[in-house]
Image (cartoon, rainbow over all chains, first blue to last red):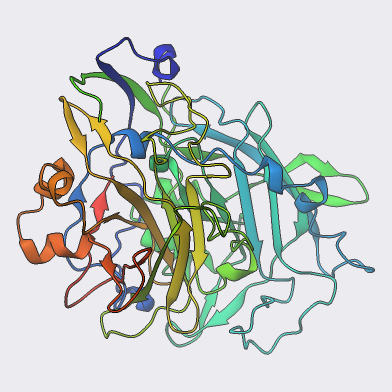
Length: 249
Length: 193
């Protein structure tokens, strides 16, 4: 967005950021290979909606509900969780390359055996008494986030015969505007299950799919302690557009 | 510089591990004078409840303002103490969600028009590879609704109807019902924002 996108407009004008509409990035809602979409994805075409005041603003919150331990999923209990300890870190950026500072990042994931602490998960794998699977943090002034957790295990699901989800961590990010809201999944490099996963492959563009896979980083790896993975999240960017507004309500 | 975007993925069936907040449904604190409750169910094409959805709402305050720097009228302290603008509620075993808020004011919009009071809504669920976005309008704002450009762009009356909250039959004046039908008969209008 241009510098004046964040300045109050002169009287009689509404200067609103205009967020890029993504083309060919997100998965089509109707993706029948992902069976759960069949009864749930809308059948009618989406109606184009202008980006006005409700859409270019959004909740700027989170700092009051996040404490430092929330970003470390390995130190919540008396013992340490089983599995490969990992560091997952990166930046939240917009598509103009600007960092998105002070935004809430929330994650959730299975334990190292591929089991979620959730009453619906009946996978025959053990729960880990030392692992809950949820975390959150605020990005810093450079848009940076960092979590310490364990590598989630793959798990079976009933989408089709012998269906297994690749290891993944769910990420939820607000950005600064309603238009930027994103929930996605981060995958791990080299996972052989990626090629068989209808959720990962619901993203049509192979380059876009690659952007959901973290990079292993020896530089982020802490000797004798934890493997490091780097993953940036890119939200829609904006430019300022000025409209005339002749009346206030 | 243009960076390519990160694609969306579904929240899956286990979002309750990470997303619900105990105070999520409270856009304003419980007991706030003038507060309203919006409840409803999220339903699938078979009419069955969607028990693993998350409903989020975002709206202006009662004075039509946002406490946000990108509001060109300037960020404004909320007219109602404790107003957060944002609500979040996971659906229960009946597919039901509940949001406690205040009625937003109308908003100016280009070119020189006004949007009727509304809440923007995101729905996330297993089976939705991206969020779906809709709006909640109020049934007793006939004049404002009639000139709302977003509503007016939806020609079919039976489609437009899906965007109105309803007074609960026999219910209180501060209670509204808004069901979200993801697919099928009376499917809710969803927007590309």
